[in-house]
Length: 497
Image 1 (tube, one colour):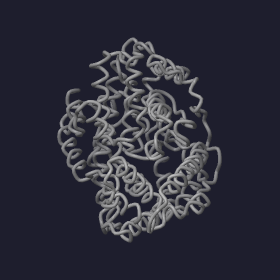
Image 2 (image 1 turned 45 degrees about the horizontal axis):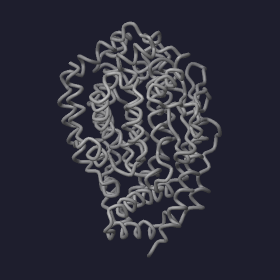
Image 3 (image 1 turned 180 degrees about the horizontal axis):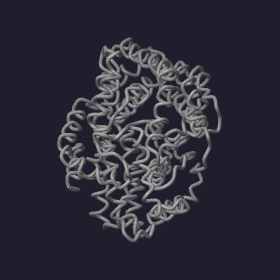
């Protein structure tokens, strides 16, 4: 089957924009229903097995480097669209349930999506645990059955298309060696085993939380919230601090006509901050659900990194380079801005924090918890997405691997809901490594206070203008002549001890 690639790209761009808009409206709490079935129906031909096979054949036959790259990105899009189309009903029903279910604890009803927010602001540990148990019961009874159907169908689609399984399919189209990355992150877990409690336990103790080994997952939102640091991260300075930081880099946030900030609270708004690049670079939404304190700053700056990347992407780039490609790249820029919230100079100059040590030590502890969580997560997902996994065994493996890596009492209930599509765990891990290279280069070229340098902003805009034409390895090699390896993260973290 020969595809009309121009027609395919035009239809793909329409589909991506329509789907991102629908997810934005639902996740932002602006509508209850996630109406994606019609979007998939209108674009169904994009994701037919014949279309996937034709793109696979065209990619393998391409001799021009740029043609091969664009076809590789289209093939990844087609595969993930094929999987999304196959599971669209389950995605719609799960999103509706998340937006409408309520957790009841001691006569009080809390929207399902607001449980983590309530836990973050709840000082009573037993109350946090009750909220966790009530939510997990709903997750197990109402949502997990949908997720299981979607998982089994996704695995079957990948096998029907000729791959041995889901992991094999995603590794092939994304050109990422998941096993190599998992080996690097396993080495990270071993390298940080000794310093992990030394960095994290004091931060837990300061908040009146149990130490590692006794800590429950229900306590983590409170840990990340860090209410004792509220004085350093005032609510009324949240958006203004982003304006100031971007201005220091020569970026006028308010003058970016395509950027829209959505920071207001809504009962059904997703607790996960997100950026919706509906039309790059012309229509981009930055959405957060404020919880309070340092976590809000980290979330806002993370999504601002995505937003600025997309908003500064060259409009003349091909669709594949504006909307597709290796998301490790955009995530690296998100982490770059997020990590400013633990920079002593930024804390002093932007938020006028007199003694930033408490904020810095907490941020390092929180980052290490995240890093170890995702290092354990990729090992788990490789098992879950193997050729023929034993799904009955996976809840226990999930609790074992996540709980073991984090040294947190970890429930089994999230064994399938805590899995992002497209093996996105690999994007986060690669992005953490890539960000260390960008940050080091910025400091070497523009000084420790690079965030106040318009020249640094110009250098970043030069990177952002590329969109995602190059993958993480290619961009790093081209810009800095360096190799992407998770060992860079381990080197930085072990230096904190």
